[in-house]
Amino acid sequence: MHTSNFSDGLNTVEEIVQYAGTIWLTDIAITDHSQVCLDSFVANQKFHRAGARRSLKSRRNVHNNVTVIFGVEWDLINEQWDVCFDIQWMEPEFCILSAHIDIYKWNPETITDATILAIEKHHAKIRFIAHPCNNNDFGKYYDIEKLVRVANKYKIPVEMNGKNLMWWKTNIEKLHFLLQSADQIIINSDAHTLYELKEGRNFAMNFLRENNYID
Image (cartoon, rainbow, N blue to C red; front, side):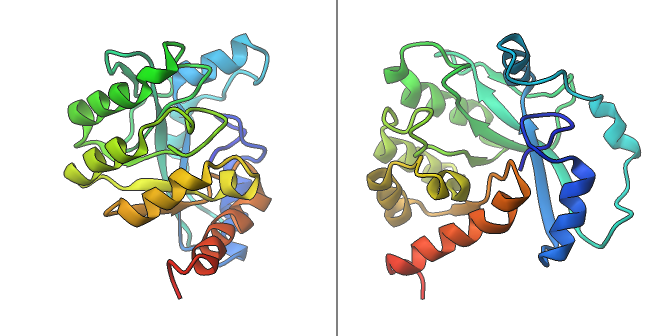
């Protein structure tokens, strides 16, 4: 999920942690966008300058027993698998590989091969591959069969993104292939608001039930 402290979320870290406890979550991962993405937001006046990430070193959860980990949603930058790993030069252990259309400005037809090169280079650090079925970014360009095959080879989960599904941003045909073919799937809220934190993953689970993927 994303915060207003360091990224494009609506709520602060503390608000998210408090709310997570009220909806019975035991663990959450806050994975704000990478620095190259944040710089793009600021340059295009989509986002304010982020707070100091180093402040997290002294942070403790004083609200409840929810375990909170902090990561980064990496950004694929170009066809040579260059990736932005950090927020304010801080690279955490929990890393997600993603691609956004405002950052990867090369030929979109090259996104699959560029992502695969990044996986081959950095697979040991990648916890999962983010929103490959998101039509607002590269959902219509990804060769989902090729991507899933490589993800399976390196035992990397692929994301089913609840927020995008809830807001009709998902390529449903590719999502079905992913659900049928990926060895590991992360069912994730990708929340930018408290509402998405509460409902995003539930929406995804209901989709799985309605389509007979789970009971």
